[in-house]
Image 1: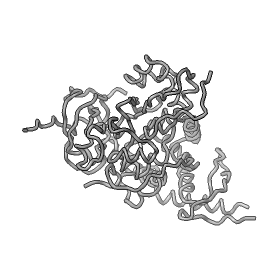
Image 2 (image 1 turned 30 degrees about the vertical axis):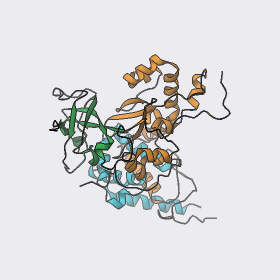
Image 3 (image 1 turned 180 degrees about the vertical axis):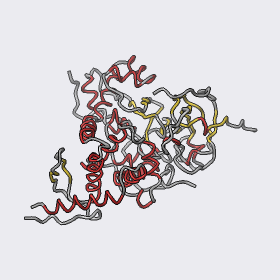
Image 4 (image 1 turned 120 degrees about the vertical axis):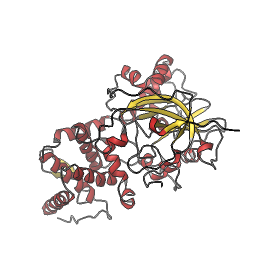
Length: 105
Length: 226
Length: 101
């Protein structure tokens, strides 16, 4: 598929990013459990028409950058009952991501 | 002679297969709601020229042709050919094309490798996305509320329910295939398979170990196959 | 608010790990959905949206039953048919089956 011209990528593998904490109505592919969480960009997946718009009959263009982001399970679930090095990967569209705030401490 | 009582959805199990006399000689079950609904939709859409009966037939054949045998072949090749494995991990679409496997879907395959220190498991929490081009149709449990809810939250407990226990030093990595990527787990090649042919190796690669809920096992009475 | 379909992390009971063969009607339904898609007349994203918008008690039906209900909604939204037309055809098919010797 050749999506329409896309903007430059904002993020690169290794970047620490935060998923927006927002709950807009309608078709979204960002699960509730990951919203507001921070992780590391594991890889760039490509540019794809936006499913949030495809779901309503729009063409979803211009294509949006998609990243695979890796999260520590202990940072997603406060009571995660497993080793701290367990992870969860999922794909997040660029418009849901912002650079993670640096920790003050 | 005619004792075909109408079955409602709640009663369910109508097992007499009837031959529906249209151009496709389409078999449908008795009068349960969803078989009826499916046939009604099929007839309406074909009559209106929106889809063709041939297209429906063709897709059924395609579904029947697809199975986890394809995935097993990919894994077996990766086990015997380290260079292929690296190509597979780098660009699965191109690597599987080498085996003559067409990527018929618009989605993109990523192969993730199990190692001594990482174990991968796949889910789609939002619906039931699944790498059908290499594994065929997903099992009921993969699509179930219980799996979709729990495997992201307590993967080790879920793996245990499938008989898989991992040491604490192994990282369990869950992949929620929520967007355009689809995932196939490349399990570790088990000990005791040294010298096996690719065909023999493919036979121990089950669907469940390519989803990541189990690992391949060498059958107790297995011996090296020529 | 966490929507009904967006279930990652929600508490749930035991997983039934057994295998079930796919029923013929479910396979046919999948093929019909795929045929519509192959014609460029629907997108997978549209069906997903309809499934997500089902009432919770309908969503909680078995997998292909919820697909069927969502697909009816999709077909109606697109103007290809109506629920009434589908239900009428279902009744006609049922009547013909029951009339067979």
